[in-house]
Length: 98
Image 1 (cartoon, rainbow, N blue to C red):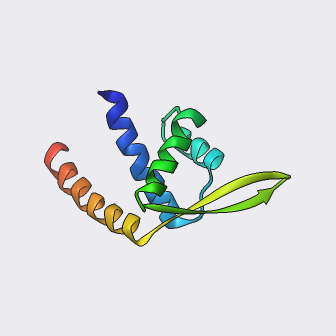
Image 2: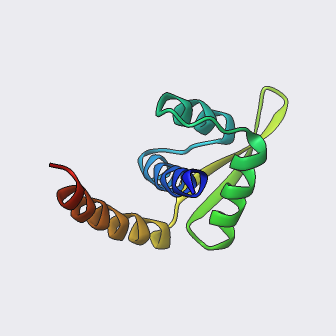
């Protein structure tokens, strides 16, 4: 159950950071690590692909240091979901925090 909840929080973090600026896999792994999440490419990249397939993220291929890298940004549908989720987080916070 903890893993499911963590994955939900990770997706919210991804949407938030992709709304702030372009993000890429390794950068997200490092950023999420600063928030206490330990995840590797085998978890992150399928998550990014699913979010892209659901229309929440879009990406652009770029060559960086002779390597291909995907840079992700939030879509309008992703922004709408993020806004809805923020409202739910506020409600939940007010309910569960003393």
